[in-house]
Length: 581
Image 1 (cartoon, rainbow, N blue to C red):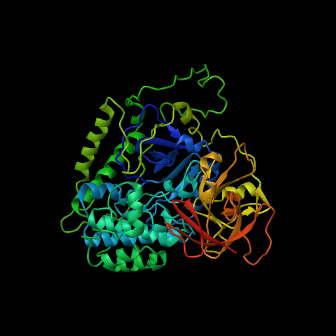
Image 2 (image 1 turned 30 degrees about the horizontal axis):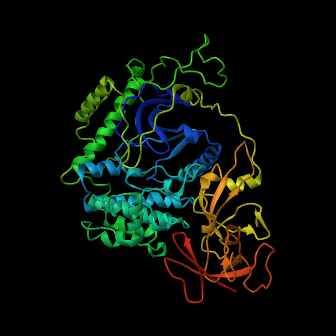
Image 3 (image 1 turned 180 degrees about the vertical axis):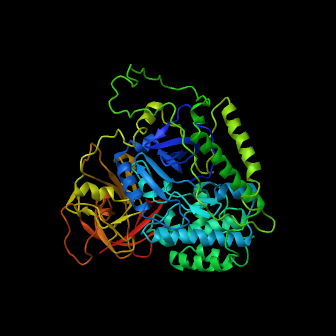
């Protein structure tokens, strides 16, 4: 991956991550810091180092390992290949080019043929992802790179890992580029990615986000209830994009239809781009060659590093052996001056084809290279730390301290101690994600027990999908469950000193029965947190000792219940309706 303009390394950055030598900064995202690196075979790679607050979570590391293993199976021409990983880092193929977000922000909308070629490439990339029974979950302009030989999809396969105990559903996805079912926590399938694909193409064709700007809640409302703004989209593509943005996932065309129709509309063999876009790509290529060239000649060790902000901690004193006293797991430092290696010859790639008003990426590379050299020198001359360029929705997170980074450098190993093998019940909890639905309920005879021994995810459309997972946390208090809103939590067994807490919300279906009790006054019927998390046969005539009534759910409304129903107010900011059986 690439996207952001290259920046010189800072004094607090590691020299190596595993066997990969770091050359420059690429950017910072929600998952961690990304670097331009070089493999032992002198191939350029993108190295993502996970933020410490995620890397320290045993749950995150296990999910990260599972998702990376699946992502490495994904092939195709339009995805950035995952080549290596060892939590807390991930290495992918390096793509020299800007993100679609940066390119359109700087140069405006793409012409019709370029949007069609972009759509064909992205659809082919999504098909490769879906062929491995995965979905992307966060396809957006910032996760699409424009390279010399076409677009690339990046950052797939990590969204489930990001669903760690400190995360919530709002963290997975980008407002304005999430499908309606993603906002509602429903079942996600390939159709969710199709919605995101259509939104990306709308942005590329118009230069605007299809649902506008604003707070995440406002964007979520527009995505679920309002039509996208497709003004300015080419007539040949507008019906396809509009169909992809349908609210009901079943009404959207499959990704194969996007591939067929966009491919038919694309002209020529390559992706024709205006001059301003190809120049931007050439600049990224030239910048990469500058930093990679410095590495192969050994120049990186000779240049001064930028001073970091004043540290809020005191550096540890090193012993005569070169490592902090008491440090048992630090990896060895690399040699100060690695022997020079001849530059690796880059693989031949077909160039992006310019349109009538553009030029090929190769044209003017010498001039752009000079510009990149000046940029490189300017980075070295800056007196303060340079900030990494990031997507509009990402925030800068402080980089890890040198002592933290020591743990991920050296011979590819990690200082993390192996965790005990989890039991099957704990693994069942670990496999659950936000948005999953479960076929479990509270035991009607014992409020501290569940009807199932372990959680089992089922389709949210099934009649036994009783509860929906709204969060996966590290403590019950973090769930902030409101029992009279039909919310609760379910704790996992302890593993490696940790517990998982599934935050749950009851899903009611009209005609379903549950248990209630007598109210404080004669004739009143009461609901409680235990009863709301039960289900009971409507035809039974007896109830458990803790309850008095069988209640049949008749609806959940903003203000009034149907005739003949009992009403409980202030239920999820509305009224809860049921009648006594």
